[in-house]
Image (cartoon, rainbow, N blue to C red; front, top):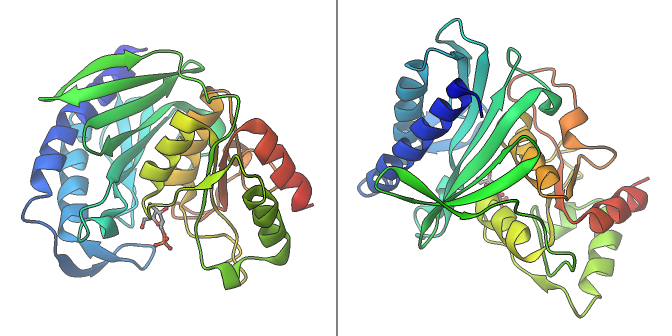
Length: 283
Ligand code: P6P
């Protein structure tokens, strides 16, 4: 891990402790929308401003961009470009369910394809604060306490036998070919449904138990809901580093060339066999 990449991960580790603590008292909404047209929670703004300030102070970081801000912040002349979803699943705050912080560290100016990621990961605010971090083709899991991280598992790989599935969007809005695929997955008695409304919580279950998470293309939203720079790419990079696959329905999410910073992308991640079958089903 290069010094600058290590410093970014250290800053995110330390910041996650303050983000988690800062959720208390910030469960309301602000009278603003993010660039994707979603109403912002107080905690979204808090997490974004905290990360922006801390990451901008790192010499090796050139740009910071997030789901919560329209423009890319030029913060230095380094060679790392950091994209974050500061608080993924913030709508879960009201119901006190899991949320996360997602980050991608790119080596070219944003918006950038996932193939230019040098590292990516996510912090999960569950019963325990944990991090899954992918770099150099391997995934490490940490427990985070007091602003420090402790390795709990190295060389994390998806279990061979998929167990869970979770699919976003309304069923009536699923294209027929995707729905047929879902029915096939559901028909396997070894699979069970897990969907919690925060991508990071659902993806972490896939990383832990094997299976598939998807927020697919919808009839009224062909690019789905999730954002390429801040969600699709980092999660695709983590799952592919863990021996799984990602797909926008036709190819690895990491191959998708962005047009705009806030592009959406259909997200499907999980065991290779399930993603391969998905792409065949959508052909
Ligand atoms: P829905 C959270 O707002 C998010 O961006 C992802 O974390 C999550 O997977 C998805 O949206 C949930 O969307 O339509 O189920 O509320």
